[in-house]
Length: 340
Image (cartoon, rainbow, N blue to C red):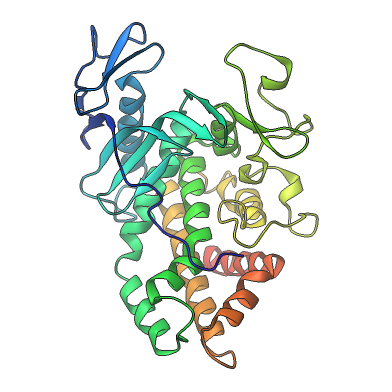
């Protein structure tokens, strides 16, 4: 288990396209039409021009429009960045939010191990990345206090307070980003399907493979019993395999999948509830309240262990993935019952 991980995964190199928060689009080198998906020329910077088909600024514009839709959905329920950048970068292994410059980034070429392809990005993928920016904006006020508390009980060999806090909240970030995507699309499998349609899935041995661009039996949109199962199964809020009690668990360092049972629970009892499911702003804000309360409880619990916040105690806190989900689900229930 890796205790300390970097929040920012990728230093931007080549930028294909940038759009403003109002969905204005600047796509240097694009010929002949801004929204043509045929015979486009894309400027990767430093005078390097590549020619490609089926890739253009339209993909970035989709992201900008999704963000505007989410801002309207949230209303005044939560703060969100006043400005944001949209970028398509040259090569990387996933889409990502970069808090250093408040940007949403997707790769022109998706690369995983020895595989690569030019992926398709759904609104759910963009919505997920924007969800990170919303939670980042919310946590900016709480993070300094949390880091100060951690510092008082931090052992020398454990890392910085910021690194420890990142370890404790990373899975909540992925959870909340998925919640935003599901609220925006009103589809519990939006993130799972969005990731599936990028073209990467796992083969029966668990190794990555690339879904060919042309239709084939293994690359058709999955159902819940298809085999091989796609890598994003744990991101499907309605997948019964993620229900606490039947869930098989994951590696504690797997931030994206760690809170799969909490995803299933919040969808079943709250996000899909016909009486409240269209109160998206309040649902998102209540989810944040549950996250804040659970993070506070986790920090307090680790601090009170003999030895304070050290490597062994962090491993103990992070190691029991069933308990982590059970306690978070209890917190979700308590918070939502107060709000609704």
